[in-house]
Image (cartoon, rainbow, N blue to C red; front, side, top):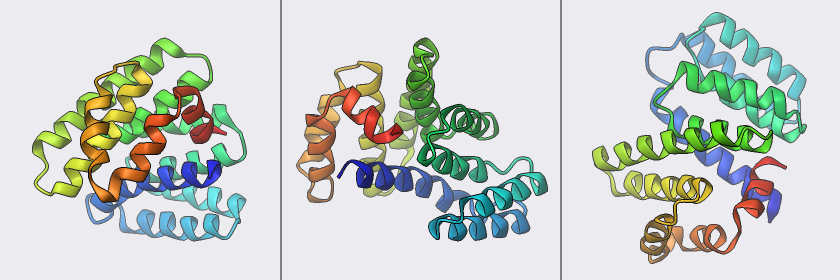
Length: 194
């Protein structure tokens, strides 16, 4: 369950971002390269995927998703400094990415930058709260609450329990909430990072 949960959470974080931005202001050829790299990565051809991610970045320097996707490869390979660099690039290029701030917070905390991590968690909470306030679809509201609660848990803000209690009553979220609620921050960190 440990590795599966980490993979599922990372996919969920990235998919939130990719669905919104794939048909936007980014270079279509860079998007195409990013999508090809995802397929290579899924087929365990990570070196080739990294090359395509780098080509997508070179083609469109504002495109943040290849950086996000590189984080996944570097985490899998336990290259935490590289993963941190790429997560920092995500928040630099996409400062309204709550997922990016949370991920960069996790990596900073893992590497001993606790003060920076706490400020990143706070930033993600603010962005999730804004997203919840402005969401029109119930699923987006609930996703935002789940992610905000997780950020609060990592920050040490016990108000996360309220969001978990509410979401635990919803069938689609109950099992995940149970996992997040019953595990310590350290156990969750190990599932995300290792």
